[in-house]
Amino acid sequence: MSILIAILFVLFPPEDKINIKDAWMRPSSEKMATALYFVIENKSETADTLFQVDSDLAERVEIHETYSEGEMMGMRKVNFIVISAKSSFELKPGAHHVMLMKLKNDIKDGDKGEFILHFKQVGEIKITAIARKPK
Image 1 (spheres, rainbow, N blue to C red):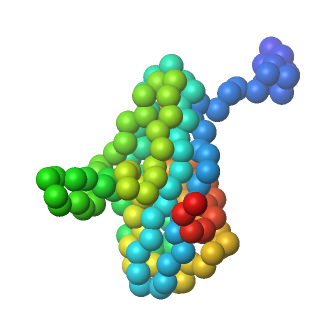
Image 2 (spheres, rainbow, N blue to C red):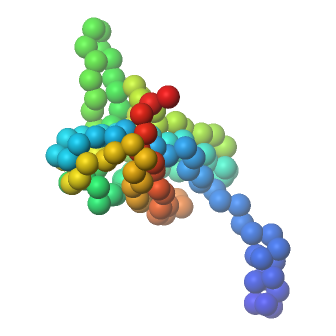
Image 3 (tube, rainbow, N blue to C red):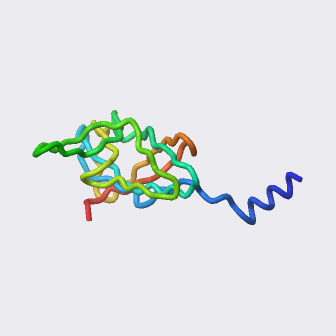
């Protein structure tokens, strides 16, 4: 029976419920800050929640949102992002993003960085982002 199940997984692999696309970060200097951006695709029938991002590139890594109150704009930490079922959520400049504060080294155009995204439903997803200037 277990051989049959193994064969089925090889022939019909389970579809990833969460996919991460277009991960990139801005170049920046040591001890400064930068931001990470990407698109989260939730292909499952239930919502999922991104609640933490880890990286060795910076001393602090937080999920942020850009906000506007009257004429004042700013950024603030948020504890999570909910990605609805069968939808996508884009972290992008001027909106939600991941802040990397107190960078341990310079991040130059073309450099790569490793990140671990923590979701409530699917668990950990490891991604690689490339440093580049905004398009």
